Image 1 (cartoon, rainbow, N blue to C red):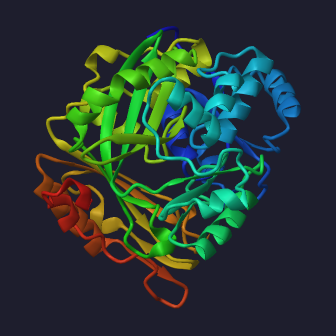
Image 2 (cartoon, rainbow, N blue to C red; image 1 turned 90 degrees about the horizontal axis):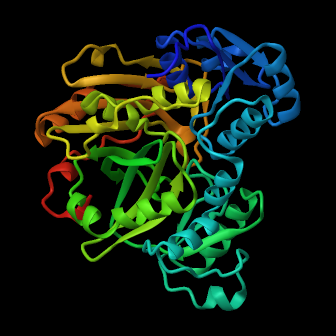
Length: 431
């Protein structure tokens, strides 16, 4: 597993609730944790409250942060759930001479959706039809669109700026929104394929590439604004054999082709019975924290491995234990809330329940939740383990009966209950 890392200092970029996962894991390894961003009110910063130390600095100032790291003997840097933060972590690590699993050049290659599509074509990974060649849509390209079409900023994550359009008016509005969220002022406009969203996660160590999980994702039926939000991700996937037979080898070629030898990589797809199409990727821990499910089943802990690499230059871990063919059902159930100020939160009724293996809140009383159709509306991420689909259904029902999130006036803020019958449908595309 490499040298002892107890007491070593690790800087975590960002102080939001998601980074608490990384801090908890690092502390369990005996690592001294420092959370950084420019928010001075630590009551708004769950990761700063959880960390051993907090720095109130703008993490975009790479030079200043690297200087502070050298002065404070910080030996490694981590970032979890944002391509931009991972890019900054790579740059800071380079300046302080610390190892990092991905280079800034590799991040730039993959964080842009347009560049990603070009790489998919190079490595024969199927992708949806593209309607915008240059990144700025011409009138002729708009006229050629066959609806529905999905529009995205080419360089932004978190489901922000993404719209599904069914006519020209919706397309024009979506283009304006996507451009507003794009640093490069470019967009992706592609065929909207009706099918099942999948996610494949690979763990890498010294050039070995292991498929760790493939899950099916059930998107929200709350309404048009929210229809890109994932409410349930579950493995084993109904598409596992089709994926292994038709896509897996090309994805491995893709990973090798960009020079990745250590770290994690996830790929998102739309699956139909005829083909599986890639539409996005990330070289980071995914927002659903599937590493917790993989660790629960296989004992392969990607978060631990990334922390270790940031401090020692070696991933550690034993990928021979990795096996995406799960013999039980594992799921992430995500709960979202509509906009408003949180007045009451109660999830005590699901703690220590059989089959509920992890509960992570993303809210507290007083938090202002925007009604924006993005992951900023996520309020709980709950991990479930069961021997069969009915067991997953029963646990989701229990959660929906017992979790309470109300606004200041006492009104329910949660989305409508997830329809658990979607999990047991025999039709793959119905999910």
